[in-house]
Length: 110
Length: 114
Image (cartoon, rainbow over all chains, first blue to last red; front, top):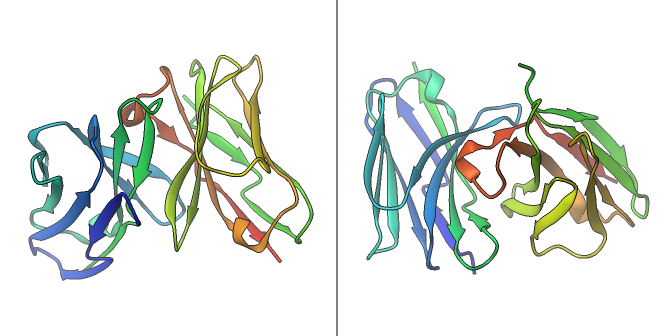
């Protein structure tokens, strides 16, 4: 049983489409993180959320604490958005342990 | 400022051998964390070091160990390699430990166990 589940696993979109990636978790959390991993391995932190909604450029992340669910939206998708998107949660009282989803592989076609 | 560097980038070993991976953090960063990434399990936290002390450890067997030196460089060691240890091993550094969103990740070391 995974503490963090993501969907979909793979996603192909046409350039310009609106994209949604979902993340559900089953543990109490102190924060939820969205990460982006490009081919080659490097990981970049996109958002850290503990409530509500955050926006950065074309990226929007939301979290519903009661439903234990978060979404990452990409508006006007572009081929450079092609990457793996990973949801991670930090769990309190565990020395800041992190649990990760298995990732969503996004391909945006020109 | 140079980013996080990991050496080697690629490594092939056979079952039963041991391996040591190295991570040099960003200058000034004293916290180093290690992660394992596999296609089936995704990312998993291995351990976190700060000022040469292990602060946090994930759920991995004792074959996985690490250390941090006084210059903040870190090494991780895997003994008695198993096929399932084939993975991308990622290192991340930060100024302050336990703050995931301020971590800077290295490119990783891809380990293949035959």
